[in-house]
Image (cartoon, rainbow, N blue to C red; front, top):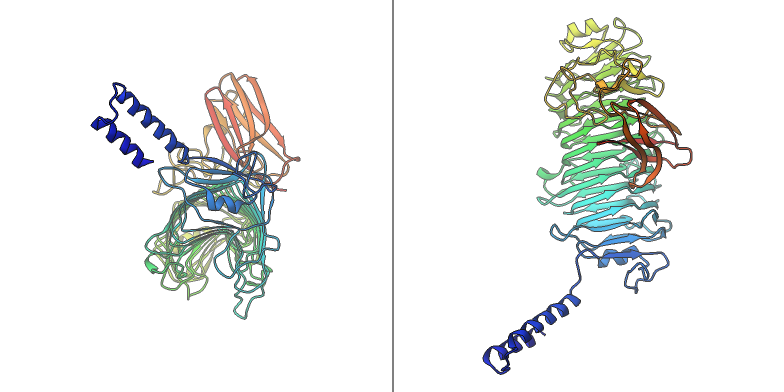
Length: 621
């Protein structure tokens, strides 16, 4: 056809077609050619559909959908979206296509309010790279709104994975997926090895090219039997990532892990997860006790950085796990470094709320890390000698400031059973233990000190710190926000690295200086008993959070306003409207009864005049 067009142009130019309408004819032919070419060129950004009752020989339209997700994974082009209808798909999907920066992502997502279920029941788990979704060396991919379940193995060293990313993949988004019952039921060998599984695994197996620009947001991972492995892991040459707003619970090993130095990448200079943000995740019921790979050990962290570097861990809530947050390197001669742990709520964990350094003298070091503005309460619930924060083997040049450490009945605040403790700065913290200021205990460089003054004098630590009850909002749930009379308010130090926001996403410094703890008290937190007219619009954190099934939401209006207060699920769909009316200036509170809703992450949003605010809450049943 191209040659015919050129011949026609030539005839027009040399006069074989001799007509006064030659120019018009030429233009018409060109328009015809453009139309023909458009008919033979696929437009960018097409929608396609998959339905369990479809047929892969169909064109993939809504009326004539494909039957398998794999058909889409072999077919889509940059910018395309496949909408997967609700139902059960008993298949594994290997993504064999990529999007591009210019033409857009390839998106696999649920159709409207329907939930597609990728079910691994009866599917064999291969001994090579595998996953219910497997992405190897592909780019610009979104996977959103799937339930992924029931992928199991009972053979040693066979590793089932819910979503698995490997190689040099980049620009991958995993959003709002529910991943559960991914299990290894394999026996372990004499060294307790051989049983492994992951809910989500990102393995950077190449170098120098990395896996990068990874976004893991709003997913729910639960009921995972993991053996020696982790619920959500980034390992090897992985950089530039965000792990945000996920909920991880009921797992028999580590919740979220960032790993280095396991020879995943072929060049050791690139073999560590790095340059990432881990924020706003809710993690609970994480324990290795009874896991065959651990026996009766409590050693699973909610969030673990093992050999990673340059990672921010902020605004997470972790409870009822073995360890809240752990930053360490399991590999001798290697360091976990430049980790910022800030503005986290850590409570009711069996061992320490925060642990750092190697668990024995054959491990690596933790160095140049910042532990600031965290609120720790009643960790060490096993009451077997564990403290709120634990410094283990080889901790160097770390800063521990502006934290609240509120001990349980043991009144054990800091643990440090190793002497390999170099230039760690500890100050501007707030401590409290039921045994009181003279009988609470701190351990430093393997020496136990009883009494706050004795500890300060002997170690030189905490010269500006306080020993006083922090006056948390409520100890029964607990609610670790501060009351207006708390001594933690304006008592911290404005050290670099405190971040811009507190646990609730509010501005970090609102008074003369930073508060101690994860919550930055604001004027808008003052109750109606203390002030009759609000000074500013505010939407406060719901209480309790997590909750079951009723929670209270408070907000304030400094002037008469049209107010809407709505609840959205993790997919962004409205599930309830709590307020939709004009209201006078005042303080308000309203209860939401979520008895008819399933466990998970929800968001509540207020519109009041031009004021808008969104907060996250977690329903646990």
